[in-house]
Image (cartoon, rainbow, N blue to C red; front, side, top):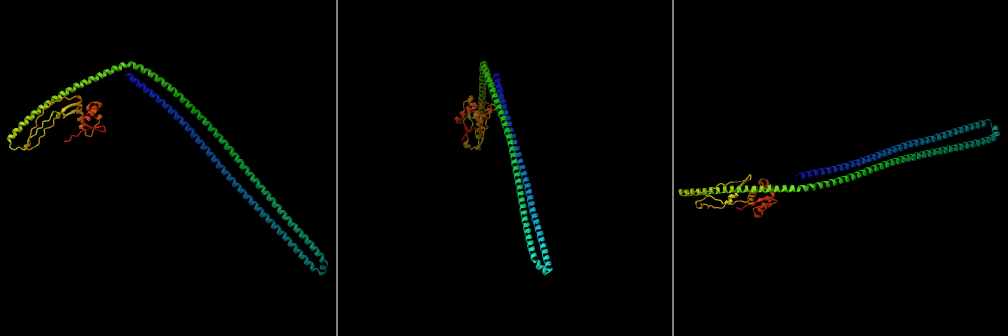
Length: 439
């Protein structure tokens, strides 16, 4: 018994040690999973931060581009306004100069007309004489004036055309410089953005490579540690099982005789207990037999007494209404009325039934003298089972009868099966029911 207890404790320790190792491996896996999860979260966070930074820079670039476009449009609007103002001013100056020239020409023509009128008034002689000279002089002067006016107009047109061409050339040069400056700025910004983005991608790739390398190293270290630990634990477990086997073999050799002796003693006790039960059963059977004999004697005396009383009553009364009918039952029916209470047999006789019958039907049953039967252990158990099942019309299981009857369920099952085959009980869904007798 001590070896079995030690074996049980040793097995529990082995199981507990194995469970502890399993829990340790599970905890290691959980920690590794948590670290991997943390790495993933950090990676996601870093990617999210990089994406936010990229979006912010994109927004800043878009805003700066919008500001530059706004500034460029404002500058172009200023240039256009300045150009329009210069053209308007030039047209106004040209109109003013032309008006002045026309005014001078008109004034000169007025002076000429006045001078001619004065000369005409000075006398016809003077006119006739100097008419040709004056006309010649006048024509020469008009030709000079015309030439001068033509030269001035051409010079003004040439100056205006040259000034307009110079302004257009200056404006085109300014626009070309602005476009070149804008193109250079855009190219420089694109180059800076590409360089910064390349640097960020290189940093991110380097960081991801470091993370992957570190994760691979940690996973490899964890797998190597788990493999090594598992191999060590298997080796230790195999060594422990070998020691247990040796110990069990040695102890088994030592305890075989002890177990055989204990088994023999136990069987001897069981046989002694069975003998005691048989003696107790025989004593109970004798007691029942004595009780039944006494009951039979008392019942015979009572029957004779009632028979005498009925004869006296018949003689005394001419027309009696009724007479008691005494039914003397056989011994088998009396045995069937035995009730088991607390593993003791108690005889409960049924009361005598008195009924009124006509005088013609008066009859006295003959007393059947039957031999008292001594029940065997199996028959007594059948009686107990039948009595118990009869008191449970809804059905009982074999396990339900074990404790009330004080008999092992295997024995009850054997007897119940025999009673089932003999037609004393019926079975449905492992429940035993009494067989109803047709009246």
